[in-house]
View: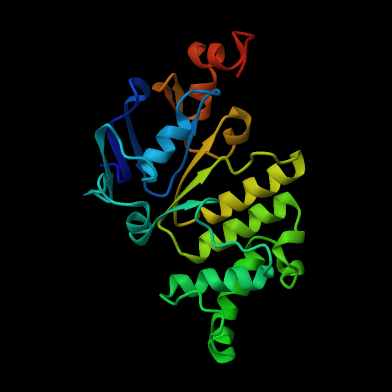
Length: 251
């Protein structure tokens, strides 16, 4: 029997009579990397916002580890182990990489963001923070302020602060957006590493980005599921090819 960590059934979202998401059902297998993709206007961002509780569905149900979380807030589901990266990460541009990650570790352990915490306490948090910084390849800039980092390295820092919260499931909103080829490869590798022992759902619009990363892909089109399966299956689906490139022969 398949072990699903996050399930949605019949998700629908209407805005003033316009249906942005219509009767979408998803099931994320525990320990998998699952992509939610689609061309512009497909409804993937709305669907993602529903799953992460930034929007309330017009209809449908969402369950996390079998528990109905449809009526819970985004903060409440974060405390249950489902964290949306790049939106709620505690990244402060005026602080160093180490200070940013240390604050996230502090949050995970139930501490506040008080900046007057004793040096002794901060030293206790430092080993875990440095471990996370090394994991995302930022150990050479641990004492550099976040504002001076390149775009790709800022994304890596955001991933480190998310990992500091020790989520059971991470939801990533277009983590590759705005990146050059080199940064895309680096962040892809980081996500693959971060996914070990976790479940990941990411929103992406580019099939090639998820081809070698994701176990399963759900394609949305006009607010509905167009196709679902592994990359080999989805990329050969004539409907997906048509949706992405107008039938030019490959996706």
